[in-house]
Image 1: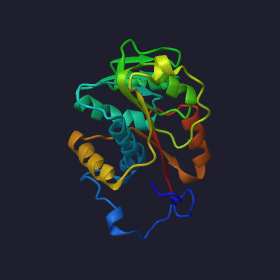
Image 2: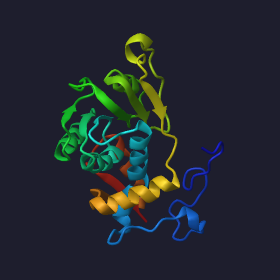
Image 3: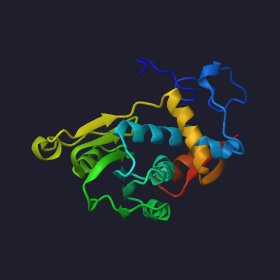
Image 4: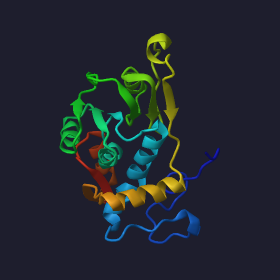
Length: 225
């Protein structure tokens, strides 16, 4: 919740440094047997997805909607499955819809479809204001939408009486906490979560960005110096 946060590789140099000096209480031991390439998606997409489930207040057995389905949503799937949740995925990309199905989603639809049941919780991963309204329209009374996006385009106007009234909530996910990291890494180890990764040399970083944008990679793209 810092007012002026500083992020390595974003606001300051050093994202791909070979060595880094940090405070010991801001680093975490990786689970045994997990190499750095497969750990990389867990430390960003995995933890922030886990944080989003917490912000949404997901409880075991809930009906949970995932709107947009990239690396973060994919890594949330085994956690939701272990909690006995039903998952309803809405995403535009055919590859991502196929991935969601293979990971055990209860239902998968396009961005034009609406889940066939009222949801208890929803998490939006796409940086689209319209997607937030779509998720809100799928909630039961008392349900929560958590927005997992650093940036979001304009949210369209919506009718309060039909979409928000009834103690529905919209919450934002700012970042993960250190405790989220500790808890998620423990869960990832317990569930033996191993992300599907595509290794891309650092000098081809732009290709990796376009692959993510165009949804060409089914799992996580990992840059390696």
